[in-house]
Image (tube, rainbow over all chains, first blue to last red; front, side, top):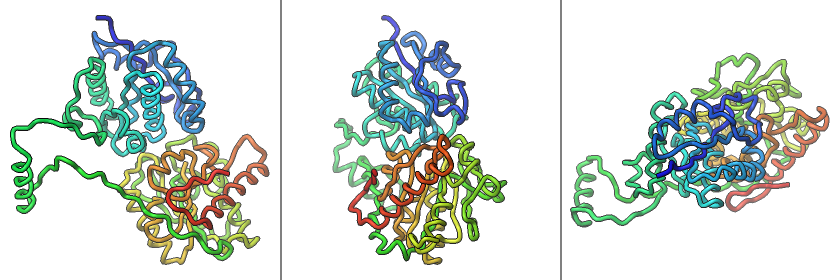
Length: 349
Length: 77
C-alpha cells in the first residue's frame, strides 16, 4: 500500500519563522519541512508521509479569518492530501483557534479526514470539540515529546479507518457523542451499583456525563451612561512601567490593580505590557491601544460618561488557567461593587 | 473574566478581536476590535486618526452598555 499523503498545518513559531513579531505572516507552504514536521513524519513510519507543511501566522489567521481560510484551504488542496494534521497547539489560544478552524474546514470543504491536538483549556477546544477530533496534550510545548507520538499514533488509526474507542482510552477530547455498546452487566445492575457507591460516598463514574452549561445572563443596560462610573479591566497585560508586581508574561499567577488617577492618557513613559502572547511593540509604544484611558478621560471631561474609576485591573490572559481567571475576576468584581462601579469595559488582546 | 464580572451583577462589555473566543467564554455584549496586538488602535495611522478610531470603538462600547440584550450580542458598526 502506498503511503497516505498527509499535510501538516503549523504556526509561524513552530515553523521556525519567528515569534510574535512574525505572527502576521500570510499562509505559505514551506519548501523544506521544519523539524517538528520531520519528527512527526518519522513517527508516522511506513503508512503515512507528510508531503507538505502549511504555515500561517496566528494573528493573521484570527484577524483575517475568511481570507486566511480560503488561502490555507487552497494551499492544502494543491498537494492533494488524504489526511491533515494541525498542531499540536497546546494552550496557545490563537493557534488552537486556527488549528480547529483548519480541521473543520478541511473535513467539510475537502471531505478529507483531519485531526488536531491541544490542551483541554485551549479556547479552540470549547469552540470545536463537538465537531472535530482533538488529541489531548499538556499545556505547553514542553510536552512535545509525549504529544507528537500520541498524535502520530492517533492519526495512523484514523487513516486506517479503525473504529475509535472511548475518548479516555484513545486520548482524545470527548465530542459528546453517545455510542451504543454491549456490556456484560445489564443497565439496572450498573445503575444500582452506581447508586450504592454514591450513597457510600465512593467515587463512581457516570455513563452519561451531563454537559456543563455555565451561561450568565446579561445584566440590564446602564440607564444613563452620562452618570455612570466606568472601570477598565483587561487581560491584555497593561501594567505600570517595569511591571512592579512582576505579573508573568504567560500563565499569570496574579492580577494587578493600578491607579490611573490624574492620568489624561497613559504612555510609553509610564506604562507597558507584560503580555507574552502578542507582539508587544504597539502596546508598549502606546498602551492606550489596549486600554483606552485617553478617550475615556476625554469623555469624562465632556460629560459623555459620569466618571472613569480611579483604578484599572489587569492580568495577562496568555495561557492563564480558567480557574485562576475566574478567581481573579471574582475578586475584581467584589472590589468593583465595593467602589460603586456601574459598568465595566473589558479589553482583550 | 467577563462572565464573573457579569455574574456579580455589573454590566460589562467585551472589546476584543477574536470574537469566537468571546462568544465561547460567554460574553453578552461584544465589540469586535481592530487587531490582536492593538485592539483599540492602528499604528499605520496618524496619532489623531488613531484616536478617532479608538473613540469610535469606545462610543460603540458605551452604546452596547446602554442597550438591553437578550443573549449574546455582537455589536457590529
